[in-house]
Image (cartoon, rainbow, N blue to C red; front, side, top):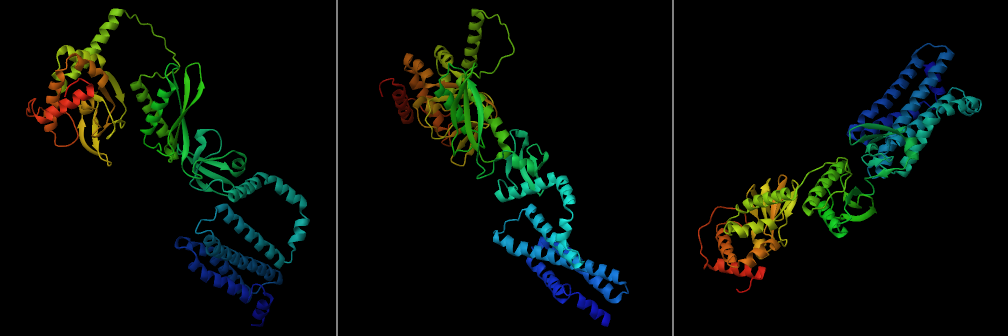
Length: 508
């Protein structure tokens, strides 16, 4: 036992105080660490077990003095390593994490602190071995210079990573772009002492060195808020008034899912080019990952809006076609289109009552419009003076703030007749289900027909009153013939009065 006492007496640092501190920290760690982090207790426990094993070897083994010294230095290292690791874990989870309000300490900071603690362990171990660390460093200046040059890039990444962590221009989960190429925009998934890992929209993993990020201009699309402005450029002919083009662009943007209402979309004239006026449509999104989908759908809606407004997109033309159009051929094609519209008007019960000549004139004044899938055609509560006849596609009728579907209409059916005849507000919203081509009859097109034959207003009012009486809801859709009410019915007379007043036909 005298030898054991001698050994323990020589181990002043690694004796009772160091061992007791190491054991106490190991007992505290399970109480401090979160449940999913408790596996980290294994490493300091292993270090402490190795230390105890070395002490046992020294006590019960028969080693030469040199071997005893080596075992002593090794034991000091393992005990200090156990203490350093335990102190790091306790300090990280009981002090730093709570001070940060539960926020996670960046990995690069954790690794650096742990590395500094292990450097301290190495220094103390060298001192225990009788080596002065300061003299060792001063006598190895050349070696230090060589190591410094060889680790120049690594150290550059390390210090750049520290600068990024201190400045915090982005965090894990943010969408960033570190150059002007869209394919390098992605979501940050990991930040380490050497590099930042980014996953792009194309699901490509990019490892960007910290030194490159520190030198590059960064765009953070998630900070200070996830709201980001995007741009779509459109060129329109010089012959179209900017006010009309801007109105169509803004309305198209408002109808696109994913485009924010606040801040609202806006348009400015970007420049005048040789093809036309270039407009910059600016809109805001809060889901950066879907930015391309939103922009693509917006361009689709712009195309449909321009088609309806008969605004030509001035794109470069590369194909030249020669057509031999005679005046007779153009007239024949125009007459065929009018005949097609006339046939569509026959599908509308209250227009079917018109004489052939009157209905043909009405067909000449009708226009065709094309709507994209999910695009709103009319809005509930809005003013309107147009009737829509479905030539192709399908639409749904919606009512209320919840957009409850009450009907679906297809080819040959129509909606909006009461707004056409009386100017009353729309009683429901109508949205395209598929791409829908609609024949539109406006008040301006119907007015000359009624002025030429005022008695037609009475016929139309009778048919509309019969139809209104057969509907179970407030939504006016195409139905079957209703029971006859007669021209003297009060509803028919009231409707006739409203039609005459709306079209200024005179009389009540």
